[in-house]
Image (cartoon, rainbow, N blue to C red):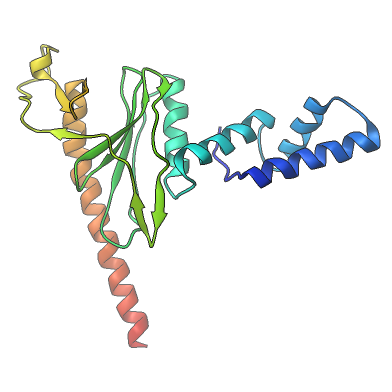
Length: 206
């Protein structure tokens, strides 16, 4: 389901609409809530509640939609990876990706820090992300440990896996993916900022 920015006030407004409709024409509140949610662009009332919960969990920043989307893919057992987070005060880039173990991660390409969002298809406790003065403030819980040898894709032993922080080891292919896609995302971020700086200079020169 697509993420829609949803505050507590949004849910209260939908509830008020449903109650108003019920007072006029009667009907089951559950059905009326669903109708109000659909009219506002949600699939149903549960979708509206899920979007609100995602905002509470992830902090309602430009990363909220991507985190929500990642979590949805993990729950459906689907592969997912995307790069985002370029529009900040300084060059930055994040990868959000799933693994075949039912996990979902947010990874900072520049600092090599990471945050486990979903582990074994269950939400991990996280501190809501903040976005201030075009900078993300994230409570990272690990970082890539480059001291762990990654000799080959096979066999899938602990020695042939990438390590994240001190608490969890994920499959080796993730380490290769982070190196490859991370370099691409870093180039995109730097190119984005160079273009933004050039456009800003052109505007100031006018």
